[in-house]
Length: 89
Image 1 (cartoon, rainbow, N blue to C red):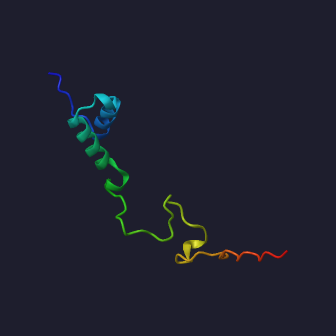
Image 2 (tube, rainbow, N blue to C red; image 1 turned 60 degrees about the horizontal axis):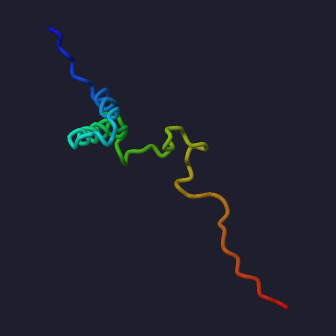
Image 3 (cartoon, rainbow, N blue to C red; image 1 turned 45 degrees about the horizontal axis):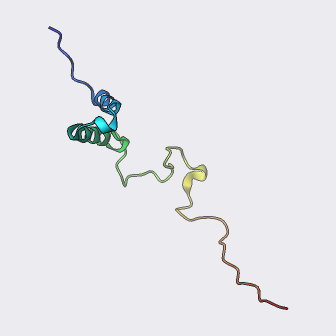
């Protein structure tokens, strides 16, 4: 009468990660990789779609200072390599 509930994907991933790498079977490796892909942040429900990014949000999720109105242009000086000085005796 003791039914065991199936493990959640996260619990199964943790169980597979607990097995030393050298002792994992090919089937365990395949399941581990599949779970890692499934649980990756970009593959979760509600994750932002690639190509649909907010230009005012940096990769860390925090707004850029200044509102990000530069449209990808870099500010600041351009540096050029100076020509070598002539050798004078």
